Image 1 (tube, rainbow, N blue to C red):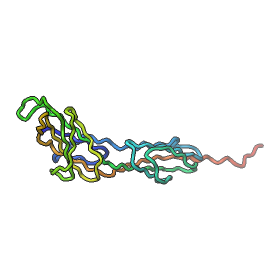
Image 2 (image 1 turned 90 degrees about the vertical axis):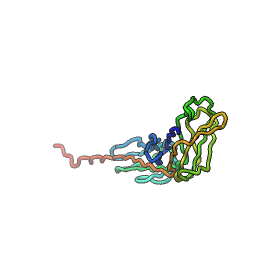
Image 3 (image 1 turned 30 degrees about the horizontal axis):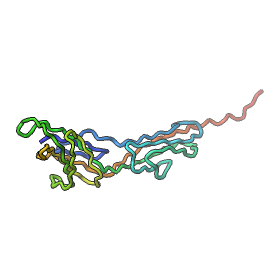
Length: 204
C-alpha cells in the first residue's frame, strides 16, 4: 500500500494508523494591533485586526465589546487610563486537505505506466465502510480537498486506478476531527499621568 499523508486545515487533530504523523497544521492567526500603545494623559485608541484565514466570527471584550467582522479598524473614544482590548475569533473548519505519494510500480514490481486517476473514500466510521467517494480523473494528482464536511471525526483512504479501471488496494487510513476552533489576542494601551503644575511660586 502506498503512503497517504494528511494535512489539517486549522487546529483539528490528525491521526494515521495509531501514530501522530501528520504534517504541521496551518495555524489560524489573528493580527491585532493598536495605532499607539502608550501616551500621556489621554490616548485615542485606534485598533486594527485581521484574521488568516478569514474567521467566521469575532467578538471584542475587555475595554471594548461587541461582535466584530473578521477584519477591520475601529477608532474608540479617548481614554485617560490604561486599558486592555481583547478579540476572540472563531473558525468553523469544514474541509480536509489530503496529500499522497503517487505510485510508480505495480504490485508485481513492474513500472506503473498507465495511470488514470485516484479515488478518495471517506466516512465517519473508522475502518469503513466508506460511503462517500470522490473520483479524481487526473493521473498526476497528489492532493485533494474534501468539502464541506460536518463537525466530527472523518476517516479517509485513497486508491489509484489505471487505464483499464483496475483499482489498487486502499492506502493507510487518515483521520481528521472537524469542529470550531478559537483564538484570542490582546493589546494593551498605557496612559501615563501628567505631573501637576507647581504651585505657590514666589519671587523676591
